Amino acid sequence: MPREQARASEPLSACRVPRARPSPPFATSSAPLERMSSLAAGVGAASEDEEVAEVLGGGGWPVVAPQGRELQLEPARLRRNTCYIVLAVLLNEEREVLMMQEAKRACHGRWYLPAGRMEPRETIVEAMRREVQEETGLQCQPLTLLAVEERGPAWIRFVFLARPTGGALKTLQEADAESLQAQWWNRETPSLPLRSRDILPLIELALRYQASPAHPRMLPVELPCAFICQRLLLVCVGSTGDLWVLQGTKGAPCLPLATSGLAPSQLGHRLLVAIRRLLQDSLPHPQVPVRIQGLLGVQHLGKEPGQSDGICFNIMAAVGDKGRWPNEAPPELQSGAFLWRKVEDEALRSRILQRLDEASFVPIHS
Image 1: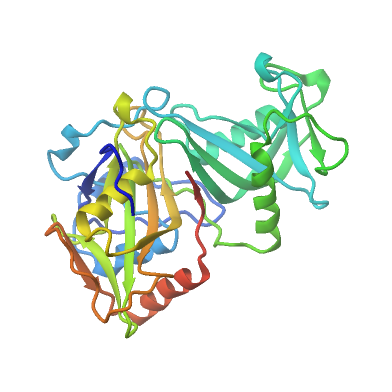
Image 2: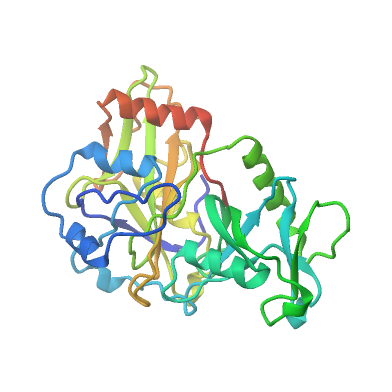
């Protein structure tokens, strides 16, 4: 894996805390922040497999910086050093897609999917629902996160598949600064003048998912995070079928995390730079190939501006070609900050192997 020109991230170990269960698949309510604070206090020990199982299933795990370390990290601040975009693909029974006509001067009269920037104190799902209603007149229910597109911390777009649940299509008589009107489009006639063709692959992605889901349904988990970080679930499957997981050794055993730099000079660096740097610090390079599989889950809350504007991306990667390592034992690590832990629980091992073999991950478009 090529070494990046600039160091845009630094490793960050998380402290082990009791499990925070995710919301049900179609619910977006979260536990009160007071409960999250008690979780972060870390009362009691959890099994070493618990964090892995929760993250693997699309759930969340609280992100806690080591004591004193958070003072050295710049927190995410929405609209100041970060920008989150939400975009929704809604399909009706005829497989038509919901489109809205732009009111903005720069693209007046052009058509696009309902999308827009998140506001402070919003969750990701709340922002998506608001944008859909403002621009199309319809209420909607999110079904799954389809993809994450990113150009670094300064521009991250969350693409959802959603279904309409009420409201009425916006008409020209209701035009405002948000949009001129909305309509269902069959992608052929009439031929709409698009604001950008970048939405066409996203529409096709939604149609394919509707026909044959490529990954389990997954929605963001409402857990606060101060930084933009990536939690890494790196697995190694040996030649005898044994499976190991990379863990950090600072504090209690836990999956390693890395943060993305938020200094002005680093905002354009892709998010996966943080993961690649962590891998370079832990594994011999380039003798050990590692493939980033995709996204398992997203954690965000955003209710406390300047304190919880961050996002944690739970990412899975595997050592070796097609997720398999040719040796019996995992590769030797070059840093004492990490260790390999063998997964003894057969049910968890089977779940990990199934996700690897099916390649069922939310894609990250970088």
